[in-house]
Structure formats: C-alpha cells, structure tokens
Image 1 (spheres, rainbow, N blue to C red):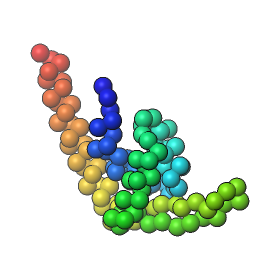
Image 2 (cartoon, one colour):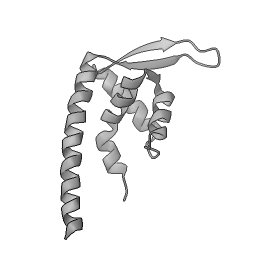
Image 3 (cartoon, one colour):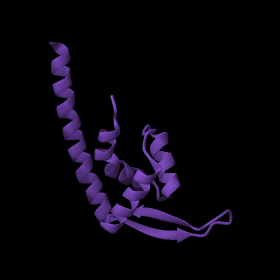
Length: 109
C-alpha cells in the first residue's frame, strides 16, 4: 500500500506530537519522525509543515547558535498547538477505531 496520501493527512499531528515531546529544529524533527516509524516522510514536507504550523500560531520558534555551522531555528509547541494536538489526537483515535472496525468486519466474512 502506498502510504504517501495517508502521511499527508497525518503529518501535522505527527509533527505536533514530536515537538510536544521536546523542542527541535527541522532536521531533528525529521529524524525523530523517521525513527518513530515514518521513514517515508520527506524533508521538504516536514520543513513546510513546521513553517505552516508556526505561521498558524501553533508553534513558537527561537534561534540557537551553533559552533559547527549555521544557527538552528528551534520550534516549540504553545497552548494553541497543544489544543490542536489534543483535538487531532481525539479525531485520529475515532477515525482509526472506525477503520479498524470496518476492516475487521470484512476480515470476519
């Protein structure tokens, strides 16, 4: 199954969940998503999602100097982002439960 379209639909909540655990810069968030099982997620998708979530007010950002290269822009979740994550988490579990029931019904036949 090609999970590309599924991933597009859940990337916001996945990024919010990762950043809720710990602030991170773009590549760090990408690395943690891949380590968490989303190996197919693209660099540009994650960077774009971070920028969009920041622009929408769900994330804060700050710059940390680096001795080994350019400064890194870190993202952190704020109250609006936590509320968004809670709502999307609820929606996900309801949707996943519905799909599981539908697929189990088909399997039982």
